[in-house]
Length: 192
Length: 192
DNA sequence: CAATACAGAATGAACATTCATTCTATCATC
DNA sequence: GATGATAGAATGAATGTTCATTCTGTATTG
Image (tube, rainbow over all chains, first blue to last red; front, side, top):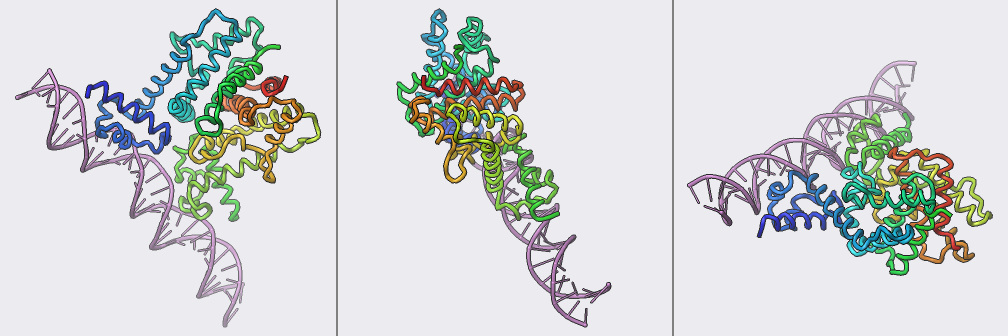
């Protein structure tokens, strides 16, 4: 087994256990066990548990951003761009419940205390796609002229809530629903 | 000091510490210390830490439900009822940041894992005001005909997000903002 | 034969919880 | 009213457990 393989084993074992059990109930010994390595070995690859946890988060963030921006075209009308990003993000979370649960846990823990959920995606090259989108919308008077945090709350908090309900099995989100929800969120931020 | 006084000291010490520090970093010894009692004393009033934590949550739930329903009139038009409840709830959270943070922590922890946030208020007499409201709205065709969980997500997830941003000091929510946000959420669920 | 990676036992810190003991208040007895 | 007995409340030191992290000896690799 290659150096990088073992590292990946550890990362994905930790991702899985933490997603399912939470940061508590994810002792290093259990992670080591699931990864098929000794407890001490983890410390060869990661300085400590915090570093491991943050590393997983960073990887997920990259993946989410990449997936969602794939196929995104900046030249479309605002509304279409919004619907595209919104549905792509929700679909990603539905397809990758472990990723979603990890991200949620992280945000609601001291680890991600400083991070805000609205910074979730689009951090590529220091710019935030979503923030740009809203700013553009406000300047075109297509979007309500209220503080950006409020726009994020109106548009994306429901998305996370739906993803949560879905991963918890409280609701089976169908494709038509994704679209209707995206449109409803657009209506919330839209300037009429 | 009376029996019930000491019990209340413990409850409010725990509420304060847990709200500010999280369930981790809230050792019983610290709670006892802040309450001005011995560590063992807590166990006279509460069987264990879990029971204490759940007890606090139940008390908060009662308080929130009572406050929000105060002044609520079932005979108004749907839209007005919605706006009334929505703004009352957000105002309560803004005015009681410790309560809000505790409730949030609880929901995002194994303690509240089974609970859903849509069950937050209105559990008085086994009926849920909000659920009734939406059902009524759907039957009048004033509200979109989509699953109730989706309506909750669209309407109340932004509320929680704003309350969070506010208690974290990321945004100073003014009265005009509360109203605009409430209206935006109504637009999201409204059937047009 | 270095030197590095590895496993898993050992360590120690942080806690929840317990329990032997002390305190306090009430009430009966003289 | 003083004295003593009793019950229940309160205490905090002691205990046991759960981990993150470190250590030590062994295997692997170059």
